[in-house]
Image 1: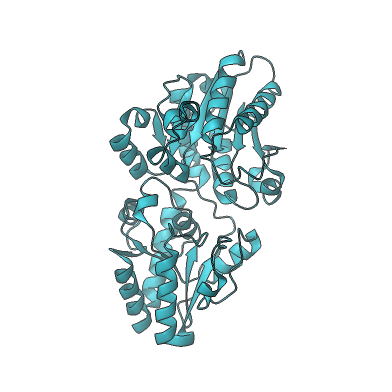
Image 2: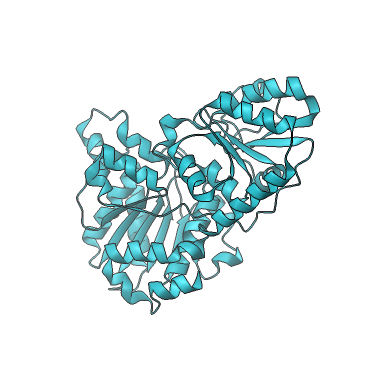
Length: 405
């Protein structure tokens, strides 16, 4: 049995990624029982999706104090996570092996899963998907030795036979190999599964040109450069260009900063319906990503742009460079925000509808490689290599999955 846990997010956050990961796992192991555990509000928008038919959903409770804060080391948090994992394993028929997939987890949840593996009296694997929280392993660490023993850096250094890590881009594993070789040796790469079931083609390239930043309006996503670009371009081109934010803003952000955005920017995560409606309008996704954060983190904005096949204007980070290398002309890969603005000026001066359509089509071809059914064989391979007992859970082999893809 495969049990998947979302231990850090609530509401619409991580829904596309978790749906994509869950569909990939279900396609990789079609004869296994798949159970997903998450907060009620997180499950609400997709538990009845026909694309995940057959997956069993279970609600869990997380303290609001810990949501979106995977770095916090807390005895209370650890005990709640351990109890949740233990009860989930207890629901599995006696003696049946279990793969615990932490789709998004705190450092204490990783240790709780290892403790469950030790005492459960059955074969258990612990597979941890690393997102942006990986940055926490290479920054400040608590001085308290007990808290330090539980932090993410310590988890990456654990040499436990049941423990494997998964990162969503090859360039992230390359950086891990440079920073922490022993952790990289226990890390697999699965290209970030995407979910394109809601996507529609972009509108034809015509005025007004609609440009959007996808995700929360944070410094790491380049919100300062995006807002300055909006101010300059609205002053020069007026209503011929619109700027959108496909997401919300942190509570601490002054609403007056968004005066040049085409719509009010709400605090926190927006509804999935609003997210899709805004993304559907866009001609281009504009992402001045911060290298300090996205060297060790996948970009949800890039993945959403790929899922919706929206041409991308972005900075030359390894994440984006690898995507452009594989996909070809999928937008504009720029050295810095000034070069991104120059690319946008060129678009405004001479909109090229034929090139825009060709970029969309190139993105659609690249997207097909990251659909869950296309990644199922790769996920099965890395999982069975780590946990050979998984091979007995289905009669399908990797060749059959590749033919299906």
